[in-house]
Figure 1: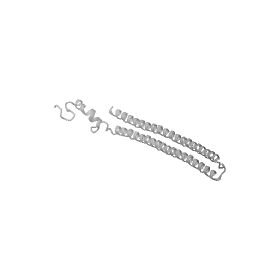
Figure 2: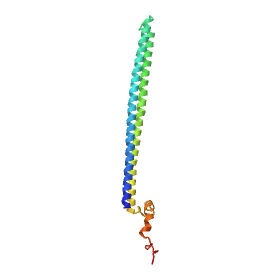
Figure 3: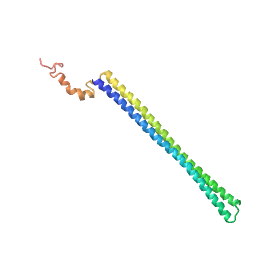
Length: 178
């Protein structure tokens, strides 16, 4: 009976270890999905900010042209064209910087997602090895008969107190009444 219980305990321990590994993998998958969503949001935010930077530069360029025309300088004057060119360059620089920042945040989040996925896979795989070890340990105890020998914890905890009832007079040890 004890051997069957020990095998059952080994099987349950193995199943629990696998369950814990699968749960850790599912949690890692969820975290990775969240990180990928953050990556997409960061990329989209960078694109939106780049468009805003370009619109702002266009507005500033248009205002500079209007002010130049209102001052009496020609819109095609070399100085006005030079200023408008620098405004356009600055706007494009800011737009590209926003795109780069969004891309960097997205790359960082995607790398974190990959690491979380890998960690989840490793934990799951380790749980398989742990489960196999539990099952093999239970089988080894079953085959060696050490599940209920006098050195085992199960024996000392559950069987030893009742040993005296199986031979109350010590007949088997030669200590009985003669």
